[in-house]
Amino acid sequence: METIKAIQELRKEKSRKFVQSVDLVVNLKNFDVRREALNTFIFVPHGSAKKIAAFFAKRSSKVDTITEEDFVKYKELKDMKKLAKKYDYFMAVAPMMGKIATKFGRVFGPMNKMPSPLAGIVPKEDDVMIDTMLDKMSKAIRIKNKEMSVKISVGKESMSDEDLAENIEVAVKELEKKLPRGRDNVKNVLVKFTMTKPVVAMERK
Image (cartoon, rainbow, N blue to C red; front, side, top):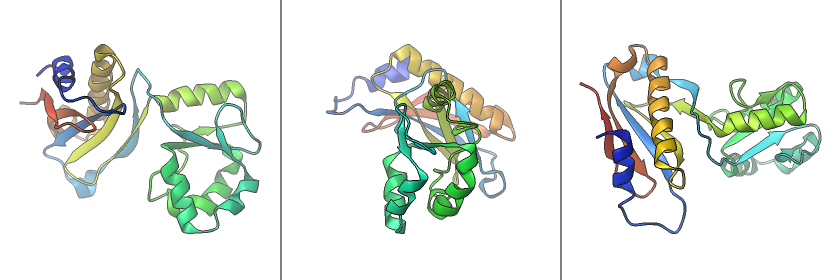
């Protein structure tokens, strides 16, 4: 089924009282999960709303901010986990990364929430740099798999069919670039909304 037809098929399902995520399931083949597991980012052309917080030296009007003075609020592991779950991604100014790693690394690391050089770290607290990084992070998708499939969110159902289809097609192409054998590692691609069953968007022979 063509990507856009798959999206249209999903829109026929019962509507929900919340905006559903559009999720992609890329099933793999000829792939050694233990030796070739992925842990990286890809970027799609159309961003979607993400909850982002920043570790900065001073408060920013651009993004929810956690300053070094706020660190005392997170003495317990449960408090750090609650913070990590509250946001999709975290931004940071580069000079603070050492202190962030020391304080939050043991919790944020395993949860894949540490600010990343690929999508999250700015050299200084400059409004233009912050805006640029926020835009980049809205289009960022973290890829991490420990099984024979990659499951990612590529947008929201409120986006147009065309934008969603483009995000899906770009995401698959970018993922194939990260795989050791490219498209030969992809068995098929399924797409679903949060509360729907998946439908096939792409089939690889």
